[in-house]
Amino acid sequence: MKRSLFRLTDMLELSIAYIICFSLNLLLDYAKTLDLDAYILKAFLKNFIDCQSLIVSLFTFIVIVFHYQMLERRKAEIFCRILVGGTVFNIAIRYMLDCITVLFFVYLLLALVNLHLGFNLASNFYLVLIFVAYILISARQVRKYENF
Amino acid sequence: MKIFKFIVSKIFLRKAILGIGVMLLLCMANYITFTAARSILSTFQGYQETKYVNQEGVYIANLDPDSHIDMNIIGENGTQAVYDYLNSNFKYAFYTDGFIVSVPNSDDMEISLGYMNEQYNRLNGFELSQGTDLYFDYQLEGEIPVLIGKGLSKTYPVGSTIKIEESVIGRPLTLQVQGVLKQNAYHSNYYALNSKTYYNFSILIPVNEEFINHASMDIQLNGLMDITLLDTSKEEIANLSEIIKDNLGLRFNFFSQKENYDYFNEYYLHSLKIIFITTFILLIVITCLSVWNALVSVRLMLKDFTINLLVGLSYSKLKRIFYGYFGMIAFINVALISIFTAFNRYGCWLRKDATFATYGLFGLIGMDWLALLSVVASDIIIGIIIVESMLWKIKKVPISLGVLQ
Image (cartoon, each protein chain N blue to C red):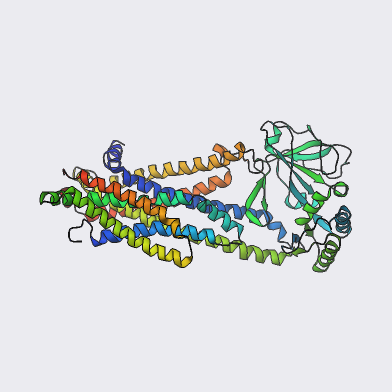
């Protein structure tokens, strides 16, 4: 944590962003299981359930925004770390590990909720893959700040 | 305009990810608002339309969900006996539709036939754009006056005749166009008020006692499912239930005015409340995320903004630029939602789905425009919240400190 690019607030922001995306997916999964009598509610929810993957995927954009702004704000810090002997590779690895740790804990938390509600654990696994892809892409961005 | 272009291209678009973020969040907020507004408006329209059933002495038939339809028991004699009883003891509104026939038309749509009696026409008739209203005292052997949807009026103007080879009375029919329905004439489903059937490609045939007596069992039975009994009482309804049970082996429920009110208030009001609350919560979450995104943008662009403020840009001008930028994003989103909806509506024409094919400006009907209006209203509220929070954040940082960042 001492050498991490993350501060506590960043960790919190990233966790909230992940939780929002996983919860949205969970909420739509839950909506699918509802046995509604009211046609009007069914028709209303159908509009969202039919585009579940698209809506959730678009929502994951907030995680991209987080990674982008986080690295933009750490530009100077990354450069200074390199000046005092740090390597881009190590900084990027530490950054990835931090992100993956947050992702792992959030996924674990939401997986427990999924398990409690009796939903399929694999239903939100695609989000993990999307987030890992975002982490890998954003880690490449670290290299950009080698020359401040 | 020059400064607006400069700030958008040199500051906002340089960090396009943040702009895309706002756009996607707003797009979702718009989609949610549009869907909810359309559901609520459509239900409200349906409620207004079916208000006539909430009158004293009006009962609506409904097949009991636990009653099993055994086609071996049901015969033409049985349905005829029920209608004989209805004709001699009740005033009733008869309406049934969905009978598909092939009638040549310029749009190559399959045509749906609807049948209604005089009572129904009086209670819940259709408004016409051309021609005159129906009359019901015609002879089956002659030409039958009919109303047609707007989509058919190009091929069959008022006064022209339509020949149908196979009809529900088992012989060819000659129909004479008496009037043309108003564009996008619709009826709502009794049990799903937000669901509508459009009559742009329908033919409405008036039915009288003679017609029903000669009609096939299908139409008689279908008509019975939603029959509306007028000026009657619980006792008379109980007798009719017995007659139906004895002749068709079916158990029907008849809902009174009070039961209809209770049903509407419990079922629809409750559903609408849930839709409204869900939409409101989702909009709050999206607004919070948009504000977070906006504050992040300010944090990253603070230096650029403060430099411009230092060289003479006023806060009020910056505010106008922010509103302009947000207005631009909102406009793109509203346009996207409109295109998406128009494409959905156009899909019905491509699928030749006659019951949902509608006419309208840019493919959108009145309800869509009203829903878009609510989208614009929600965008204005979200826009004010975002722009004001951005300005608050900028004003919090002294210009000299911002420039040094």
